[in-house]
Length: 383
Image (cartoon, rainbow, N blue to C red):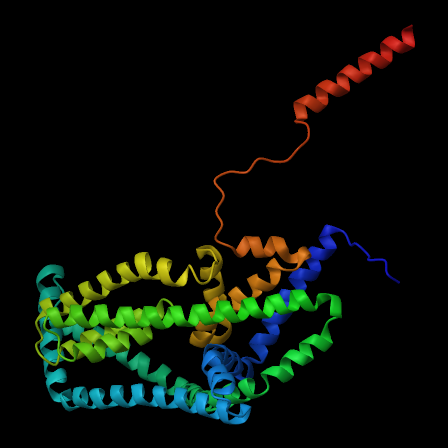
């Protein structure tokens, strides 16, 4: 009964791959349920020190401590959204000016194309009308899908605080469940995994917040220096959207360009906005991310990019956001299970300069020794 069966490598590899594929497929099927739960889990881990402060330091009952913690978080988010909504209302009041400047900008673009590419304005407008008609036809087909997506997003936003409250309230209950799930000899390793997951998630989320603040400040300063209106608001929006890998900064750039047209249709302002976003992204990718994010989550860029692409394919923007913390959690688990340790190393950012195979004898040495043994056997037989 106590003997452990050791399976061949190919069987263990097959089991591992089948398990990963099954988990991914289950996540894809249940993404509408799992995404808000995973989001709430990350928020709950981030809020855990605040909850512990109310619970242990101030001696509040657990339910009251959790309630105050989640309520403070919701009020903070609502305050940020209220500020952004108030500032956006000012931009909306300049909509007439924005539309006028957009028309002037488009006219300049038409003239530039006509002058340099010899395409008449009438041909350009005809092409735009054809594209617009095709877009309208396709848009009618996607209106239902868009409405469903918006409804799901609103529902998830409502459920996340509720799930966060319940996760914090039942955290000890979940820990007892895990302790019952594994034998007692595995409890020290389980405790180590849970502690490391907590530290990793808290470090990653806090690093994202620091990065968001830094990008917001840098963008606001850059937009203010080139004379863009609503520089602070646009900087905050850029910092928030920057949390979405790859797509976020593109959306932020489009919004910033449109908002910059409240003042003037001058193309120099638009080029300045593009330049500011480019410089901020260079600083973010080469200074902030390596210094703040990569030191918190030690996952190499190759695995990160693949994880983000897979997460986006499975669950869209939310999947792209959740990809890195999920990979970090998987790496922690893999590193502490002997049979999965090579996969944890594959995900790590440890880049060895070279590798020397630990062979006792080189192939040439093996051949020479075998030849010598044969010659000795022949000599012994002849004697």
